Length: 385
View (cartoon, rainbow, N blue to C red):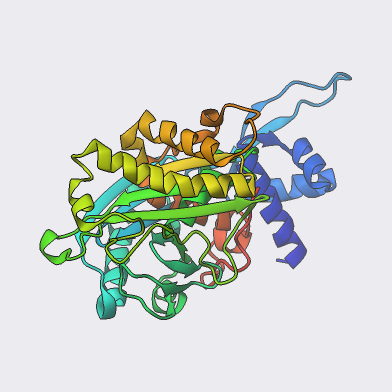
């Protein structure tokens, strides 16, 4: 297939995905392509089973042929999103529209030298388990804590998993599968989930704040560091990675030598966090004071809270709003709280997001969507709306 035809087909598929349901005429207008080119490409994609015709629309003011609406064939394929945490993982299988087909959670240890064997074994077992759930598996997305260069598949650093130098995920893990396998930082994966499954046009400048309470074995948890905080940013419609792909890595400026984890909490504070409301409020105020500074300085439009934040209910939103206002010297022109959202994916935000990242890549490149390219990483596939 000629490269121009591949590119046009990818643009068409992506437009259908973003709009959920549209027509040949509308696609031709949006992509500024000839109607005959669109019709030929769409008919080809229908033959391959990637898209389906749905209903007829109404004729225009001057009459003429009624447009036929088209949409993705959600049964064409599925994608797997997996979040790995120290001690456990969450896996979600979704169809082409993001509907859940199956879920699975498991417990195991990933650390240091056994990282490759453990991760590879877990992914292969998941692929084997989920193969029986329906549509063909088109790709896998992995989200985990650490500094990740998602574009080339390199985990640069991850304290929770004992990775202290560049780990070539693309070589060690992805190359062992005959479908594309991508890796991403957990908070950035959440961003891809929001972009992929909601396609919200207003999300151009926002941050995703992820809070997770890690599954740990108390006798091994010497520092009592069981809280994970991650930040991800979209600036002007693009996921912001930073110069060394460490954008969003966070540590409080209030930490001292007695502090444990990313904030100034002591070991004793960690042990009381679940039971003492005063410790929880101090935790949230310290974190949200930093968030308020970032939101105001970058003039972000939205803050999306994911992971364990949802368990805190209005408390988190109330304190975040207070800290944002406290940081800003002028009157706010709108009600801040209406722009503070909880992620609709809750504690499965990372797994969902990892699946969304894969869909985003698939719908940007027909070759991997059709399974004709298995070695592609995300270098040329990360796209926004």
